[in-house]
Amino acid sequence: MKKSTIASLISLAFTSPVFAAENINLEDVVVTASRTQQARTSVVGDVTVIDREEIERAGAGSITDLLRAQPGVQINANGGAGTGSSVYLRGTNADHVVVLVDGLRINSATLGTTSFENIPLAQIERIEILRGPASSLYGADAIGGVIQILTRKAEAGKPLIHAAVGLGSYDTKTAEAGINGSVNALKYGINVSSFDTDSFSAKRIRTGKDADDDSYRNLSSSAFLELALVQGHTWGLQFFESKGHAEFDNNYENFGEQTLQSYAFTSKNQFTDIWHSTFKLGMGVDDSESHAKPNLTKTSASYNPKGISQYRTEQQQLTWQNDFNLPLGTLTLAYDRLEQDVNGQSNVKTKFKKERKNDSFLAGYVVDIGNHALQLSLREDHNTQFGSYTTGGAGYGYRFTPEWRVTTSYGKAFKAPTFNQLYFPNFGDPGLSPEKSDNVEASVKYTGQQWNAGLTVFENKIRNLIASVGPATSGCTFAGFCPVNIGKAKIQGATIDGSWNITDSLLLSGNLTIQSPREKETDNLAPRRGNRYGTVNLLHTWGDLQWGAEVTGASTRYNDLANQFKMSGYALVNLTANYRMTPEWKLEMRANNVLDKNYVLSTTKSSFSPNGPDYNTAGGNIFVGLRYDMKH
Image (cartoon, rainbow, N blue to C red):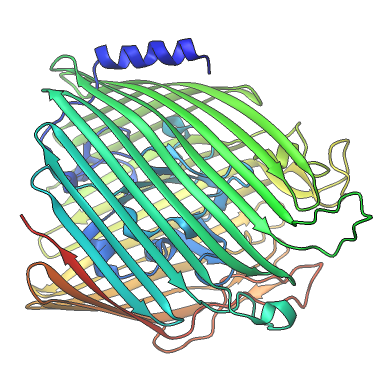
């Protein structure tokens, strides 16, 4: 991006409008569904919000454990803490999800997925999950939806300190601390956390170098500054970093190191009563190193004595969004700029460096009048690699009683090929086309005094699916492993979720997703996705003591598209408890897999390794923590 362009845009940000600093209770609003603040009760899209209180109450050990309990979400993991994990929304692929940290993309452009295993819950204030196509709002890759992660911030006021420590099975140790506050016109906050565990061997066959436990440690931090010298005008800086070190099984003494970063400058200004504008300039980084010592001799042309594979993704991102509060609804006009740069080197000295740029223009309209709600969006993406692509979405909601509401929506989405699929030496094909999808869905929801319930049905048709099954090409010499636009898929399903206040102190909640994520030609299930999965929770509050029980599970899945290598269904029972000793001190406990079930989330079995081992999962384990939150 030219420096003159950036300079002029930054200058414009200080003289142009941005979002007003309104006194809105964030517990009651959603931003991800439309890129503007909306009351949760008026959102047309299928959205789940997880706030800090729920994160602490759940006591989950990782973000994937927390997400697994949400509607429409499946996960898999290649072992214990710190090992590769994937998140699937509504049966779509793991790279069909846009993940944002404080509004910035943080995924790997080489793999197309996000390293959820290296995003610690200790740094998270809030998670918003938007299920369904969202390319008309967020651009490429949002075929399955969007997961927006907001790092920890506190309201203005005197400095408040929070801290927590914990111990658990597998010699797990955690610690976190932070301070948030304000001085006159300046808000500030800094948070640090650490996680250390011996974990367990990632693979179930413990032979040779794979026999040891695969430990993991993480050190992360986040910080923000926000200055409001003039009413209605704020300028802010934000930073997030997570450094993970994980050992893994691959027949050698292997370990991986990964750094995730996001940092940004944001300018928010209120120009008039109806015109608000936001300017954000930032970068997301995924820097991954894999250390191994392959069995090559020094005479080999591809010998690398250090055995290091490194892949670094840098995503420079610029957004200028203008929201106009009209007499009937809110009109949004936005410009997004994304520059993706990738540097890669395998442990056999194979190198590549590529980049691509994307300019996009967005128009959105949201209106909520009486019993009617309408959302429209249209986006044009211009990409230096695959050209232009237009996506749109439309949704409508109608509340026919104070308790009952129905919605329906349609949306188009697309996914750009990853850098590995396009350019990886001897494996890539630069002629690949984007994947495309059309999604239609409808819902009915009931919101009452004692119970809430919802049913959402959806159908997502995906074409141009990229699969690594093609013949050799000029760019790919490994026949049978070359990426090719060959697939079509149709995903039909329904999600049911609800909660019931049985008494003032007893709450029953849960969700169930029934889906059919199938490849169209073979009618086989998509790899690692099941037809049914869900969670049931029971939460009881007795004075200062709160305890809960959770049952979560999934049906049969297969590790391959041919559906030859089966992973049986499972159901796990987890228990949680917390006791508030004083207004500021709280004792927390979680027992996972209390029945010590043996289950599989991922396996190495394939047509090339039919007897490969399964990846291990945790047996019965427990975690106990002590938390301190200073009060005003």
